[in-house]
Image (cartoon, rainbow, N blue to C red; front, side, top):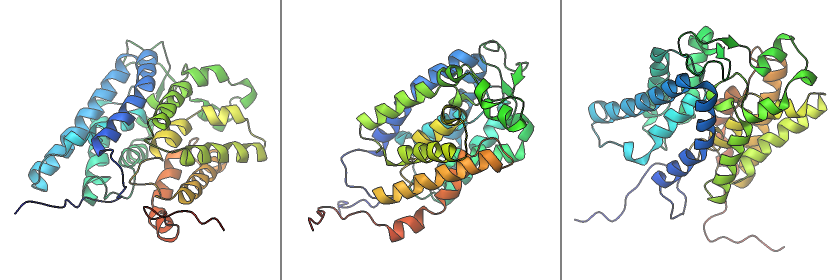
Length: 318
């Protein structure tokens, strides 16, 4: 008998776009930031990105082939995208063994343990990143300086990030080079290096209608408003750290974000609030990863009480 209906994992969205198509668009949107990372950090960035992508793909293939006994899902591109996003959350001198461990955790625990794409509760790349940060804090907080380390991997010269300097009180926000934060000439993880490159990717995703503005704008807007309320430096908070990467590429993941527009706004506002709270009063200088993972856990609750309109339903004129 011919198969008439294929039931896949949620979320179920009425669209002509395929999973592979979405993953391809997001990967393309990340290419400007990847190019900046390669320019500023050179061979180290190349090694980390290549290792992360290869390890994520290999982990997913092995689990599907020998543990779940089902066909490979590598063709949908989600493992490759997870590897790229994980690499963007890592320093360019992170040892290969640590990158592999993070990749195995991201795919094995963050994704496949729940049944694969569409079933995971948390963003897999952030699961891998936070696991590495908690398990190997020294390696994960050693940040190579840009440009001077392009030919170095093991012996890279390191320094503090912008948020790290502010957290330690070694400088005030007025002395921070805003242009360096915008263009990428700063220390940090691979995906933190250029806010401009990330914004170019964000605009591309909006133009391709892969994502909507609700989550990124609500996150950035909340961070901006909260920062102004507590007397912080608006440009530094918006352009530094992983905020742009998290708001535009991590929090907008279909599986781990709300379905309704109102739910997306609530989701984004809470991420923005938690991020600023951790940055200002928490133990870590950066808080966006923890904020997104925390709110990922509330997505089922948000979707339960704030449901999107049914297909074909029209807004009332009254």
